[in-house]
Image 1 (spheres, rainbow, N blue to C red):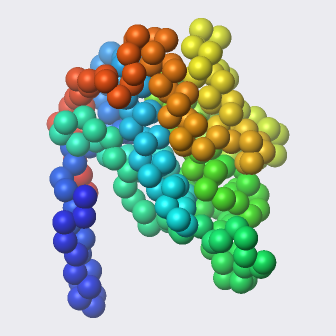
Image 2 (image 1 turned 90 degrees about the vertical axis):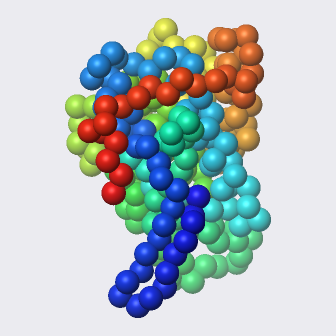
Length: 235
C-alpha cells in the first residue's frame, strides 16, 4: 500500500506500508530450519500471488511486472503475500496497434528482469506480452513446492540460456500432485500463447485445494512460517 510520496527534485521519497520480510527470506529461514514449507502454506502463497497478478493483468491495458521473483514478493505481519518492486513494470502496448514505435519495441524486449525467472522470449530479445509473468510465476511455484530454486546448481545466466535455446525446464518430481505438475507445464510452455491466464491458474489451484484439503483455497488459513529476525530487514 502506497501511503505517501514526494516529487521534490533530488529528494524523491516513497512511503509504503511496513512489511515483515520477503518470500526469499521465508525460504532461507524455513528451509535452513525445517525443510520445505507445509502444503497449506505452499498453496496459500501460490494463490495469493496468482490473485495479485490476475489483478494486474486484467486492467484495460494489462500491467506486465517483468521481474517476478521471490525477493520481489513481500509478506506482511499477517502472513499475506504482496507484489512489489514495479521498477521494470510496463503497461502492455495495444496488441491491435499496427506497429509499435522503435522506442516501444526496445522497451518491450531485451534481457529485462532476473535471469533465473526470465521467460525465454525475453532473453531472446523477442516481442512478448504479459504471459512472461506467467512463466516467472511457474518458476516461483516450483521454488515454493521444491524448496530450492529452479536449476539450483546453475548460474542464472546458464539457466535462462538453457531454457531459451535448449528448451530446458526444471525436473518435476513424480510424486507431485497432477494438478501442480500440469499447471507448471502449462505456465512455462515454450509457446507463450499456450500459457494460461491467471484466472485459469486460480481455477487450477482451487481444484488442487479441494482434492488435497477438501476445501477451497480461499478458506485456508495461514499460520505464518516466521523467519528469524535477522532475515526480516526491510530496506
